[in-house]
Length: 245
Image: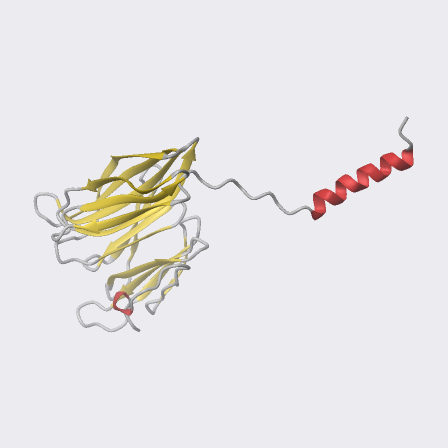
């Protein structure tokens, strides 16, 4: 029969081991050793991708493909991963700023790129899952700005006085803008917490601009004068992308 004192000692040892023991590291994602490289065609009418790196037992490049055709790809980003078993899917968004018959439509494309890892092999598949025309002004020489947080994409062009917020789930659209001197979208930046700042620059020689700030939930949290921006955690911003006050 276990004595009360011995039982108490065993319980205390168990509690201490739970407190002192380090957290167990989460298992690495199946595609942890893989990366995707992209390259635009000379006319920005398509973008090719190459999945390379290593999986247990092999290394090299495992698959490739081409996204498009586009009138002129103005911006793109790769969103977070979704893992189901040994399959890891990444969402790729491309904004075509010269779409449609007129060549001035702004069209959002969503692709799904999936790596199915079965060491020493990786199978790469991709498909177009959504195409949506946005209420923005485009053209082959238009500069497009694109950023995202967990739930939304934020898209604008330097010919549009509003930014479009697109829900990643359901693709609901909302437009935000309305500054009195009608500045156009100059840059869209996001930080590690999911805050997004849309910077509006000078328009038609009129000085000044403005900014609209969005929180992690996608709702506006502030706005005002001055072309504010936020600094991403792992990506530098060229000053050519940002207007001054």
